[in-house]
Image (cartoon, rainbow, N blue to C red; front, top):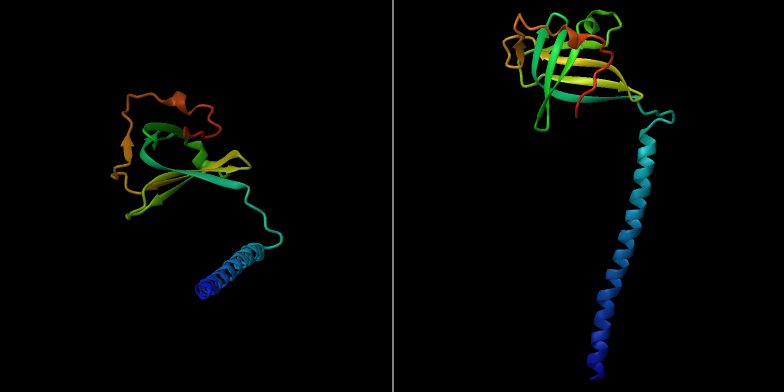
Length: 160
């Protein structure tokens, strides 16, 4: 009986000690990896690293309408269709607030990108299809007066 008990105890020790030691090694390795990943992060960033003061919001365009005073952009957020108005003068002034970038054929979908600097509106980029026959371009009827919507626009605020 004593021999069976000693054999069982010896078997338990042979099995348990290497398992405990492997767990301790794994924990130490994990701690070392975390420390080395912190070192890698700091090593990959220059000492004078500074985050950009710019950030942007990009929304796909559902429809864009040309109007004599600017562009009307329809975009979808969730289940709602929202619109924003971009005055034509933003595109013509040398230090304007807007750029229009035309997309050729391909899989890129038209979008509106709004850039913010230090949390304040800075400028926009409107990515549109060059061909006005594309499904995202629309026509405003000639007898519709939308002039009042383009007055006193200083920034774009998306309804997100």
